[in-house]
Length: 207
Length: 198
Image (tube, rainbow over all chains, first blue to last red; front, side, top):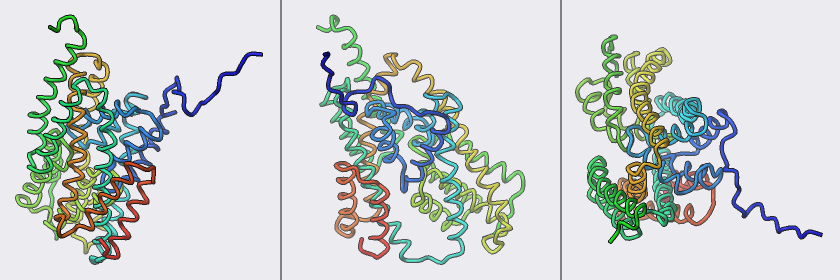
């Protein structure tokens, strides 16, 4: 009698990658995650796309996020557009974009119409402050969780640490405009990564 | 606040957002200073209070922060339709304002992103494309942590608003180490703030 191999479907890496079933799946997935995103959607995108649905690995997420960040426009909207395009082309991109914007837009307009007639309630101000502090924590935690994706980076641990540290200091503490940080530190990083990839591809060329 | 907008003004409004769209690297919020200069200081289409409350409301509401642009359009439309006092009679103007603002800010940047990201994905094995993505990884991760820092710092210094900082740190640790749903955390932050505990 042939011995059955121990099946462990939860732990084994599935040969078939998880992906959205349909264009409407994309629309509702992005609607749902946009509606959870108070004070910024990115933390939710990371949790839903990488940890729950597993449409993207942590490394793919960081790469896509880099592209979404450097191109003009709202970052999470760019990201949704890119993910939608990858699965269903232009239709997918538009569905993801519509999901990200439609219901949040309606909600924010209703809020604006309602709040125009109500006086300032101190409790509302306080609640916004508390939610803002939580949103700050969400961003920080998302960044910390993604650090693991740097393990496989071609630039190596030391270069990644220096680049990340330099970015944090110039943006958070010195408040240098983002464009200059991307051009300066980003340029350095690009040059170093370009060199490292060349060395990986042609190891016999190294001294 | 009540203003009069002619067709040329509506087109100018659309044009302003179209022209800023491709400059919005790092998110639409980076162009807010220029919008303030044009919409509030130069044209007087929007009051200072409306400008600030639009940004605060979009931050607090669910969804991408870019919706503050929609609120700019909404408020300008309300002003053009006779102000808040006009009630729902101003809503068609407000809807037109939302359309001008969102089409203007979204169409150029999303078109570029669509084309560039598609090209990048098709050529993902090219050395410059790989170098770009690998090189940017530590930078965008640091930018996320920096965003958390800036949001905290905007709320006050560690000495004066330590309860808020503490709430931020606890949230970060919980999200990092557990799978607790983020909506619970936001609700908890809202309740703590409502009662004035943070």
